[in-house]
Length: 157
Image (cartoon, rainbow, N blue to C red; front, side, top):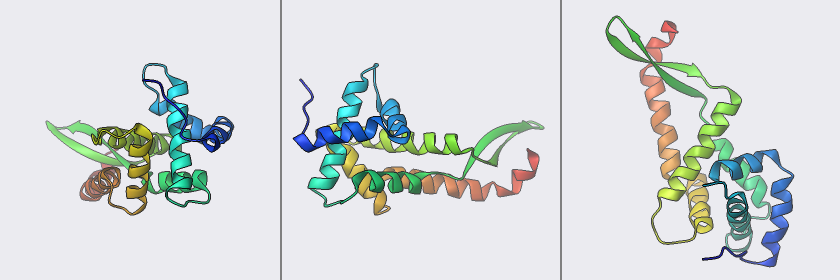
């Protein structure tokens, strides 16, 4: 099965994607088996769908804002102290937080088994994340809850 662009306008997005390091990081995270051109086309089609079907005037800016809302601030790591394991919260670096947001969005978009193309699954996950009902947003909330519950152990770093 060949991967086709949904319209001529989606080819214009490939130039925008190639010039933006933020979007290229997303393309590289989404890539499977070294097929960068496939993941580039998927993202270009998703941006085209956001603009044409869902009425987003600036789909790239909208996409970046959604990813910003998925960025965690704190993370957890396990530390064994006196025979007990503690989850200790720590502030995430900027690159790590971005990487976690990208991975979360891609993982939950792929997990959606509706038989739709990946571009449509990605658009669906983006729109659900914006309305705070997606699985990736629930994952972020669970992480924030567990950080809050383990806040008492932050002095053990």
